[in-house]
Amino acid sequence: MHPTAHPTRYELHPQLADDTAPVIDLKLCEVRLMDDANHPWLVLVPKVPGATEIIDLGPEQRALLTQEIDAAARALKALFKPHKLNVAALGNLVPQLHVHVIARYTDDIAWPRPVWGAANARPYPPEDLVERVGALRAALG
Image 1: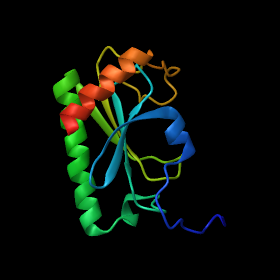
Image 2 (image 1 turned 45 degrees about the horizontal axis):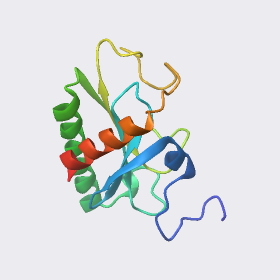
Image 3 (image 1 turned 60 degrees about the horizontal axis):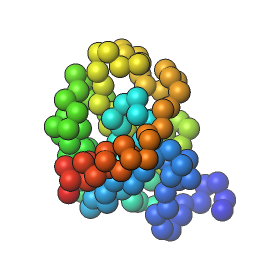
Image 4 (image 1 turned 180 degrees about the vertical axis):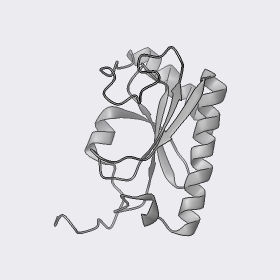
């Protein structure tokens, strides 16, 4: 595909697929859990072909994205009681539009810095991943 061409159907970027586990599909976003046990960390990926920026979404889609970020943040807050919630849409390494919602603690491995590059990701043991995905799915469903 030409670098400036926009895809005609939604596909999850391979890096996001490698780094995350599926949690639930909401109306706009695919919600995924970052496979890093250092932080309770959700990634919301709008199922909009070619979207790389929030401004690529229409007004209704932007409103829905805000509602789904709110739901993700509330689920993390209810389940994990963080000191702070970080919400970010960077896309410097993965161009596909995605929003990080991260539960943070004043004693976490990266505090008070951003989580990126602070420590190596610590993959969940399989049974912990299944349990965490189940809890998040219930909280978001």
